Image (cartoon, rainbow, N blue to C red):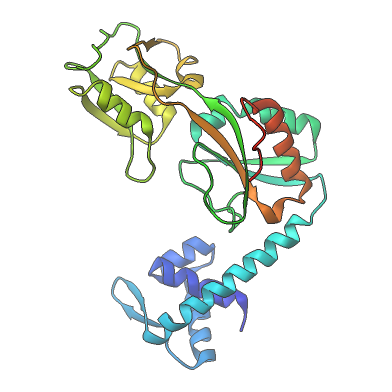
Length: 291
């Protein structure tokens, strides 16, 4: 049995349709369908029930799903170990972070990395999604919450200060009230944002007018006078036409965490970025760098 067929089986099981699995694996619809039929013929049992909107696992498919997932864990570990042994200072390095961090904080780090290691090609993945390091969706991830996943080496970097911003001609709200003020807040459906609770506590009668998952968009909407927004000060202070609103209490601050899989610890490119990031974004690191 080929691992590629098991990988496609997992994609179909997770996506629920041949078409979605084809898109997620980068294969054509006919190729995925053909490989699944070949796998079913090989094992001697149907693994999926086809229906109008997609596929469902059969009883046999459900029983072998866990075995397929165990194969995937081993295959991914095998791949990471091989790649992690790559001591070449040249090649691509996939780096993931949120939009605002990539735009306003990360550029000096990338500049220094390329200057010190010209053979490294940074591939920047800007998204609010949390990329899976065990699957090598990224090599290094920067984010504002610690890593709880197993096997991750993480480092606490600088503490990010946040501020409440408004367009310069906005009438500032009164703490504990907020009537007549509009709020631009982050989408809390997937990730938590402590400043949203802070805003609702400090301006309980303000009205939310826009929910977004993009800090730079929040800043632009705030710049147009559509409402108040809590922004990282690296973003708010750099956006023309915005003023920081002082209500006697600052929004919660958060640390930036850098993480990579322990299997990638030996890769020179990962170590090079980690060294540069610690040097430039060390902030108030207090000796508990790697966990």
